[in-house]
Length: 352
Image (cartoon, one colour):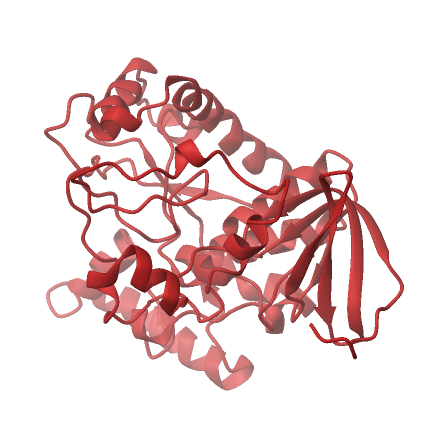
């Protein structure tokens, strides 16, 4: 922001969301469904953030898809698992709130939005020897989505990361991936791959991108379509530069836009800007041994939200960010894990 920046006519809304990954879009959709006027701003020229490049899986015990498949478990089982996984960081009130909300959250998005899920009921918990670990029923991913349903939103959606696709064609974990792995050993698998790849080539010629969306980009697409349908105003190429404060409370943000400096006044501000893998200084301070590794998320994940969150009245409880002696894992000021990351042990975290 410079002194020469021209301030445009202010916007007013009930909720301002900064960031368009899965967390930001989910917050925007939820607020809009409950009747709030919502504006979502994204610093990059496309929506999706790191979520669009991720696998898009979520760990959601006792979810409706598992129950429909006949998998019933008492809340004490995932509670026990998390208690042993988290150790001294186990917060009973927060864990119970999360576990109680999981089935309701999935049901809400299935019932009221364009979001549909595919179960991962055959996927066990990461650490099978931990007390409370389940053999399945905890994993969900967004169902594949036809990108043509996005209409004008399509060119504003981040494309799948080419390195995690085959010639730009994303492959979904499960039966889709199994068919590609069995390509030369099974006729049904060969026919499946042939259909998928021929359709993909046509989509590249016709649209210049993959149109059969899976994994994280399918999650983002479905949420973005839901946001549009609910009247959320989506503004890309609009980085938030400063939070607006009044009487010690956050009441909006100053946002750069193509028209100039935009003042957005809001009753609530949600910072969903992702992490800081592209902030060399913060990485060097907090994880110097990992500083030479290539960050996988988009370059826009550079810690902007953390810097905004340092403003008065915009913080999170510092007790959630303390480091435990002897632990090499990193804590993040978010309610859920980074998109696409694997859960690791409490004693050591490997990159990625």
